[in-house]
Length: 130
Image (tube, rainbow, N blue to C red; front, side):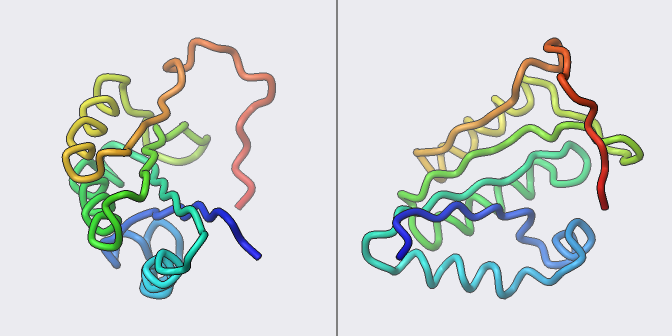
């Protein structure tokens, strides 16, 4: 009943994934590989680049994992948007563009989303709900 699936792969390194999400990632990675084999389902992957946390090395690990499943699966790299009370900063545009170019060597269909470095005013404040 599915024609398209987007997986948000937070991290490949088990300890980092657990720290970031509170859960183990083995089942997520297994499901990603399993669903990729189904006929007629378009697969997409995404991850969030968070400098000094889900860093460049980890984004490259995500790309390598996706490529190990299927090199044609597109990967979108999102720039982290800062959330109040969390220590991480948004990446600079040149950082996310640079990592995306490196990821394209692994997954040619990769793209990135980085916004406008906060120059557009928010309609609503970002609020942490958990």
